Length: 161
Image (cartoon, rainbow, N blue to C red):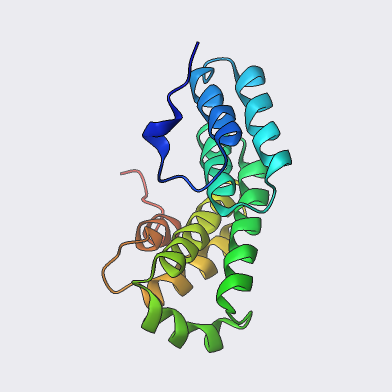
């Protein structure tokens, strides 16, 4: 079967990596097979943000939250390094606010919010609340999903009547 990698021309990776990612998608129902292709793509391009984001999404939707968390950490670290973002949230916040329309910063905020959501799924509620609170501080348009996660995590438990 010939894979049409041209329809993914926006994806900034080599053709063989595109083929591996397409094969992972085509074998979605067979987790062992599809995961093999994702892992091959990761092994060949460990630092490619595009591949890391694809892998994060793959593991998230396969409910492999531990792997999704590991990949999200790598995406966050890559963007922090490439954009020279500070580790201290209070120092980074004004930079994030002023640059939040830039694609890399948007990806950082999306990934950081997703990281918080995965932490919540893994039972790390306090960490998830902290992250969703932080993302909400820079997200005046509720574009990154942190408000939804925060509202779910802080909603009072309803009593049965």
